[in-house]
Image (cartoon, rainbow, N blue to C red; front, side, top):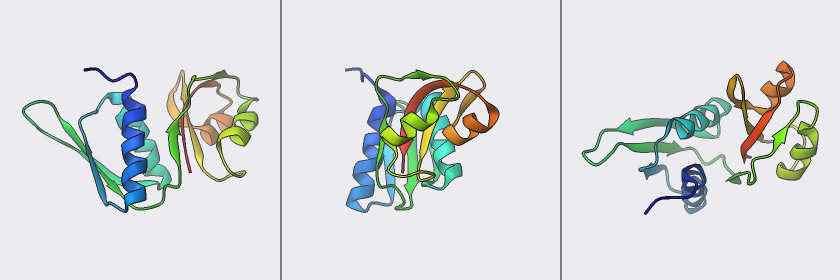
Length: 130
């Protein structure tokens, strides 16, 4: 059975384990996109470190949780936006100004919406976290 959206599956695991008070998540979904999203979340301080564990059937991702996530989800459909339209989507997905991040896929790679606004890039919205 294949998953429709592996990123949504991993973010759902993270949110459920955070609400249960667990300290780590083990998941089989480990694409490059998921790893880059986790790197951004680690850099912004929402999750701890993560590591790839070798397994015979496929590699696992072990994600350490630090209890700082209130809500996390993917944005569907992934809107294509210009660099001046970020405020509209901040109001839609984040609870307050400068609280939380929206992860954006630009032609220069994945970054937060603040970095994209500073650099003047537009792109596709992938996920939000606060």
